[in-house]
Image 1 (cartoon, helix red, strand yellow):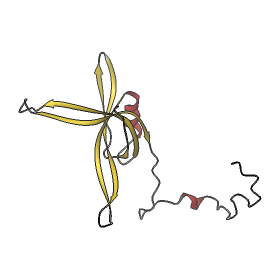
Image 2 (cartoon, rainbow, N blue to C red):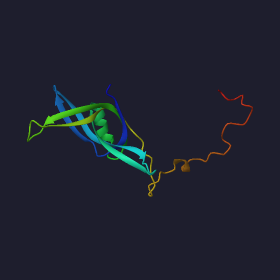
Image 3 (spheres, rainbow, N blue to C red):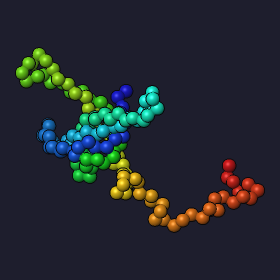
Length: 146
């Protein structure tokens, strides 16, 4: 089974190109996402490790990514791993290879707005306040559906 699900931010703007194969022209888009892993060190301090992963999308998915997604946007990618290899230009006996994600499905995620100081905007601050007694009533419990 070859299934990959990644959540990250685009590390660069998508690069789109047209490819013709078997008389059919289609769009291919290449992009990289930065995937973070948060962990705690032995001394108790928090740290983060970032991995940059190459991705490739085809057809209408590629067109949508090229049109609506840009560097820094959060994205959820579903796909499979694909490894490519090719000979070195100077030494044909030496081979190069790279593994990337062949995107089958994706979701552009919502980015919460931030204040100038980098903290997230509190969306509830602009809505109507909720009264403290807005929860379920303290009756005999006959109204509870479970």
